[in-house]
Image (cartoon, rainbow, N blue to C red; front, side, top):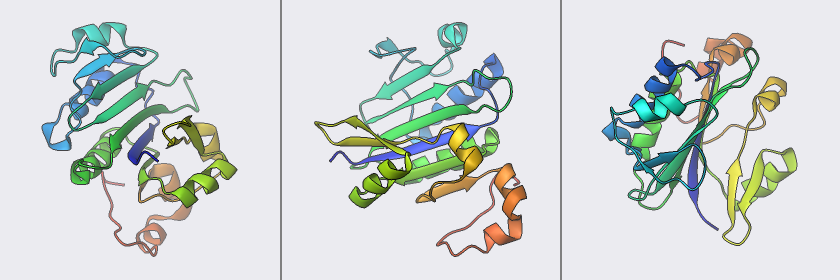
Length: 200
C-alpha cells in the first residue's frame, strides 16, 4: 500500500478571483512548507514549469482547476474553485509521500492556509488499513489506484453539512463548528494537542 499524507482544506472563499488565487499561490510558494510546485497545469498531464511570483499565465487561465506537482520531496496538489455562489466551498488538496517528507512544514501550511482562507474544515492524515475499510463504508475513502493500493479521503461540502464523518490526525474546525459546539468545549476536548489558530 502506498503511504501518503493527505491534507484537504474546505474554505467558504470561492477561490475564483485573482486576489484569492494569488493568496493560494503565495502560500504554496513559501519555502518553509516544502510544497513549492515544480510544474502546473489545468488538467493532467502536468507539464508546464512553475515559477514563484510569476503567476500571470496561471491567473489568466484560473477558473475550473489548478493542478501542481514536484518530485523532491514528492508531493502534488490541486485547487478546485467553487462553482456555486452560495453553499459551496473552494477546495485545496495536498498529497505527500510519507517517507522522507518533513511533516512540520505541512502542519504549518495547514494552520496558515486555514487561517488565511477562513477554512470551515481542514484535515491532515495518513490512512491506515483499518481506516480504509471504515472510510469505504461511510463513503469518505475511495480507491485511486487498485494495483498500487492508493486510497484517498474525500469530504465534499454536502457531507460536511450533514455530519463530520471522522476526526483526523490533524483537524481544523472552522467558525461554523466553533459556533455549533462552542469554543470552550472544543478547547477542552480529550485530544493530545489543542490550539486556537487564526483568531477563531
